[in-house]
Length: 427
Image (cartoon, rainbow, N blue to C red; front, side):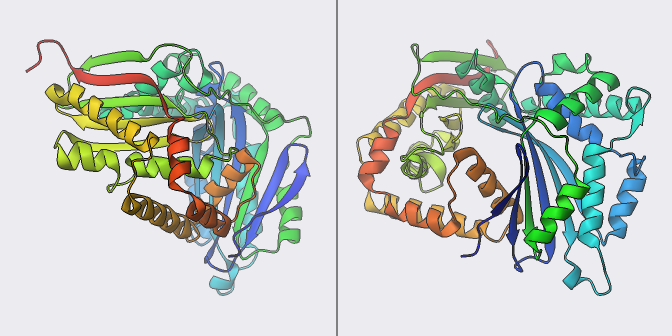
């Protein structure tokens, strides 16, 4: 399967990855700036792309930028901020129609690269900083996003469990930053941070589409100019297990349903030999509706509205989580831990193994149909240093044995038990 990216170094710490393909009618570009996840910059990194996306020196109003994208046959642009391990990545994405699919169109990709390069490197400035109005508006938007985390109780419980489990570690920080930092961000200080990002952050650029790699390398280097300088990829501290007793944390809020989260350390990352067995172990444990947690906690014992598990593969941690009635929380927690022990002891049926591996393989094959999913796999490659095609990954999934699943699961060491429950005296 022709799904590998070819890497072209543009300068120190700046790399272009190109996957020529005729599968899609568009060309998609992703630009990642990787910064350390740190208290002093986490909120700046989250706010910066939101402000940059509003306008540029070339298109000084949001309306003008939007109108120009429409003129490029409906090109789309977006920004995001991601967290992998203790790396916070500022992400820019551009999608433009392939010229072969638009009769009479010429130079669409170079024009899209010009727009993208302008947004990133030629921001709209007023005086010694960004446009104050845009900073104020996006600061308000980011505040609402952070404060709105509590509206999704499952997500909020995961955030709170992570903060407790990784207290004192950078991973305790949320990718969107902290509300208390927002008032200290000024147009001038945000511009100073923008210059730091441009000069210090390692940059990975991914392009998928019907393109000529050699010509694209020249176009990207010219239209997305970045200052030369040393760019060191941020590290992530991985703990092989807890260094203390299991921590119990309870939050009491006005909620109608409880959430139990058991955070655990795996110590297994993208680089490790047990990586694919770990993913299968997670799938058997709680990754899918056929998994042990869902079947035992929800279906057989009717204790939870949802019951799943998930893995963070750069930091080497994971979670089991369930939505429960308050009175059922302790019993639910006990059954969740029983299911983990079952996987650790190799009590995994042939059907569980076969269904889990088949589901993971199907998900991987489906990734080939999505530019976004392919870019995510390519970012994994950057973090892991392992150049694996989809066929390689499928083969590695299919080689996983029951013994390897048990071995990987034995690394799943409970660290923090978090409970979101109602306030004292609640009905």
